[in-house]
Length: 71
Image (tube, rainbow, N blue to C red; front, top):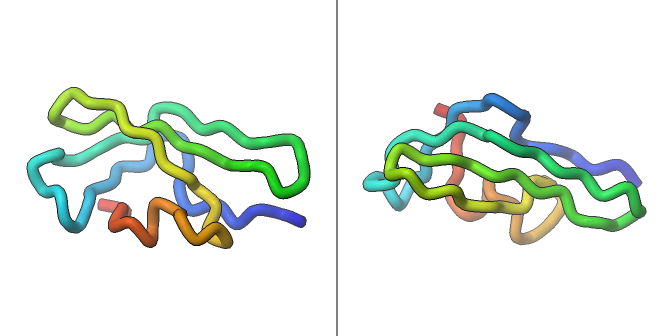
């Protein structure tokens, strides 16, 4: 089963609900080599915090469904 990825390294994003975070840049992307494993991204936001999200569009907790959008 292939994963449908939403974000790639270097993408600029915003969160629809948490505008105080500012813009973010994808600074790390990790893929599981196992079938059905997680795919994660780490995003560094303007507020100085790094936040980690699931990056698989087929997963119910994908960062897209939590409000992360490409800027």
